[in-house]
Image (cartoon, rainbow, N blue to C red; front, side):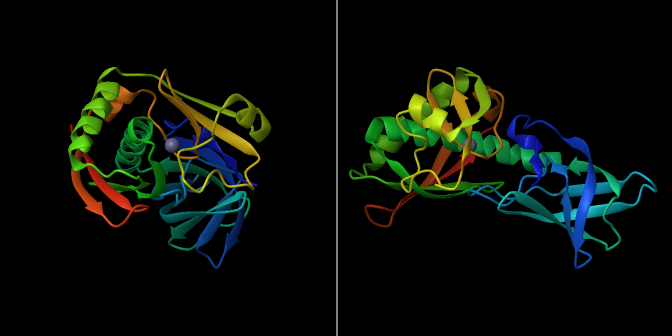
Length: 239
Ligand SMILES: [Zn+2]
């Protein structure tokens, strides 16, 4: 089981860890990590591991999650179990994903509150991101209003608070755990809650900004209508 450092500190850029295992000279599991894996529509982090004993550097080119374990693909070969390493996250990429991800919470919750939409899919990118909704009334004019409301919440610079609670506790205190149409995965027993103050609170494992102001702004750039359960919206960040 990997200790996951980004759950309560999304701004951790460097950390020290011990190599627990190496597979095929290219996949490493650490006792703890701040590298975000490819999950929930948010792309994996890249960066490097520096071995403390000899300063040898290994690039991290892909990160994935298997149950409670996070596996990092590295190159070149050479890491071994027991090595002490320093992990360094490629910060520009991660921070851009944090802005995109936090923006997704803001926009999706505006559309959920205004129109009762539920999320059926999403994919974040560095330049543009996509959210798919299930939504009865797909009124393109309305999306201009949603964009304005989202930018208002961004401008208000609301705090984003993170906590980890048991699933029972989360289910008792919240009406629902997520705006995902498919609901919250049943196998998850501990829930990481993400609260945008006076706006939303929901379960999510991604990486988030400390306040909405850091998003700076969003622009809806394209809408596609692929049927009731698949209204597709693309957005970008505005600096
Ligand atoms: Zn999230």
